Image 1 (spheres, rainbow, N blue to C red):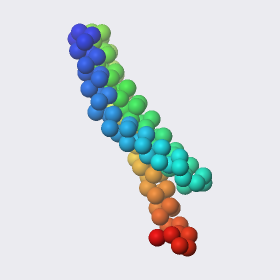
Image 2: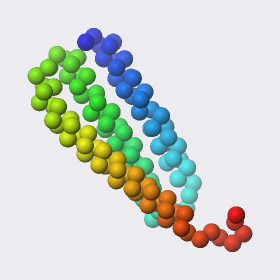
Image 3: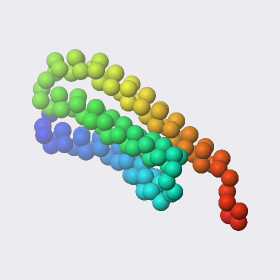
Image 4: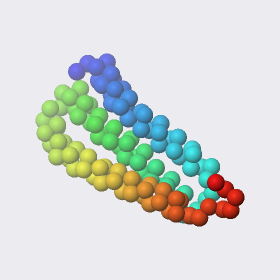
Length: 118
């Protein structure tokens, strides 16, 4: 694999994750304007966790491409199990992030509204 092909493949991999990263960034910016508290902290933690999982998942996806580009085909067989375990771990962390985000949403929606607010 030539360097330009590797770079193109890596950029496409990043492109797939870019909308998610932008959405998470917008969500963080929207949360920064809310009052401080436990719910906000959990929501920010959840969004940070989801962003980290997205970035790490992109890195795990790039590892086989780098191994192919360097011609290290024997390393791919050994890395397959580790990468699979890594992806399962990231899926579990992503699930935890979604649960944290749902908890924060439920807590925010259960709070009574101040009088006079629609």
